Length: 277
Image (tube, rainbow, N blue to C red):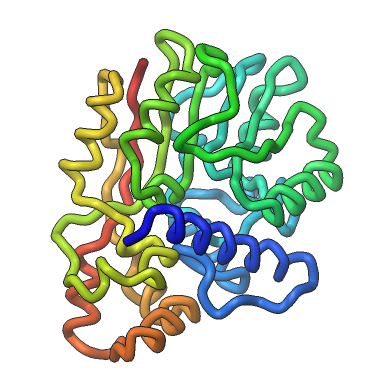
């Protein structure tokens, strides 16, 4: 799979999702774990309370997460947080309330449309301690040793160079600082027709790697004290009824009701972990 072309397709697809929140037409296949109509249900399933959901701008939760990285390690007032693949700002806004006006949150995203939506949401919610910048998570446009936490939610799996992402996360963190991420990984290899599918990659499936390989990237970047906080499958009913999963299956001429579909779903899991620089 061509790395540059894949990245461009991912950015385009997420851009379509952002445009749909700004009154545009929704794309047929744009994101990994849900759609706008499923956003709150998915968010509650993966660890967000209703209080949190009610405290962020309506268009910030796009239903594309797979965990709650802000809850994995203590975040304190005055700290600097970097959110890799910040999207419409959902997780950035959550930690913004925690770090307060003496702290700072930097969201990094490669989609201009997502950045536009995130900035619109920030203005709507008066998040003056939060900024969103354009950047590739494989090569962050940020100085070294500036962050107390790096967080990310269901984004790193989209990179074909995860080793670079974790090395960059390590670089921008202060010594002793924390990486807190939720992501999609595999407990068993996927069939080749899924692994080689661009549609599957955009849907956060074919870009996922086996747990051991994923953890090796983190360790090789220099992180220590890697702690898996949770590892669980998505509820199968959410996977099989999600319109975007159905769109993916249609693109692949794949029968979602088959035992094979259920087998593929069982190979994909969400993982939440922390690690220390």
